[in-house]
Image 1 (cartoon, each protein chain N blue to C red):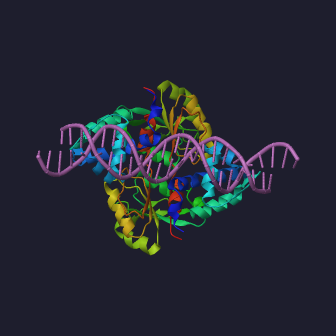
Image 2 (image 1 turned 180 degrees about the vertical axis):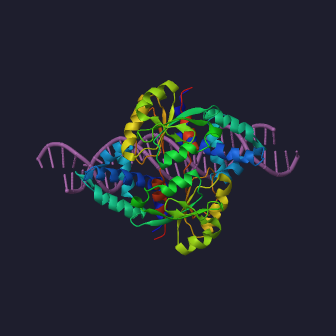
Image 3 (image 1 turned 135 degrees about the horizontal axis):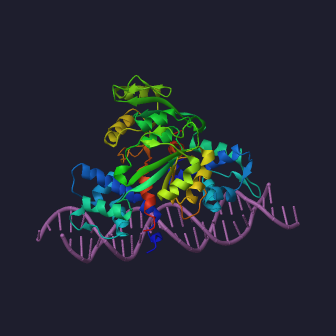
Length: 207
Length: 207
DNA sequence: TAGATTGTTAATCGATTAACAATC
DNA sequence: TAGATTGTTAATCGATTAACAATC
């Protein structure tokens, strides 16, 4: 079963559905509908039903969806019902914040090791992690079988770091550096860049 | 001239073009082509030309685009040729990192004030900022005429904070809290959420 | 000139929506 | 039963691409 059959834009919405369902569950709800979910997320009910229909039938006519069941199904589809170990590369202000972030654990992710190239930082602590030498990155990531990494180094170093990560066996990169990475097409990349998002919004400002 | 005429998905790509052009300029380049830009960004040359054509004619047949001129034009289109003051709400680990981030200045943005509701934090320093009381948020944002805000509070508090920001005159929100915000449709919202991005990528992992 | 590259058109491709039978 | 809501189909809507005349 080739996964290319489901449009990426659909896949991109599943984590948002999951997030909202988890919140509903925390609020004590047991069921929801495409209409309700759509209103909360700001998209149409039809789109939610269409999206889910790519993966199976999860609801009941008349009553909607069981929240816990749909959460379970989405976690399975997204493969976040287990835990993925991650590497974090670059301990500046942002890397520091991410290393201390407690929110990964409940959503299928866990930082396993943290790297930096600065001799001043290597060996010291960030959160619960001892900062490791970037020079040992390939060896460690390979032996730990880490498939997911976050890049929080400077823009100038990001491409080289990314290439080394790929060489070490990493298959998915969350890139916080403000550059487009050029990597083999079987490597997944997502970008997080506040400047890009801010500039997107100011376009719409009244003159 | 109603701005809705240009698809949002086109607008979303302009900051990426701008980012790449600025990098080329830093590398000492003077001109580029849609083919070259496309290769660097990972999209087709045709798409870049089509996108730009919504706003005017910026290139020359045979030689391509002047980098400095195209940067100038994109900055003007995106309205980032000036500086937008921003408010930051929530000084946890992430808010702390953002308050210390030096990268906004060169791209049209500047943090002007930082808020938190915790009496322990109010009055203390984060980066160059003194943390202000959230209770005074509306008054300060209104008097400073701030139009852009970043939310780095907990998920539970984000909606209320967002509503207060809107009440204070904010028109664009960069939301780091892991919830969908429900706000008037004239308010621009962008989301930054590593969990969402990570879950998007693991879908594609081989079983 | 010959080669390169633009801006634009038309064709293709893909995503969203509206509608509704099925059914809880 | 009556009302609600699903999953799916077909129609609509929108975005991307390929191709090319224009021209630097």
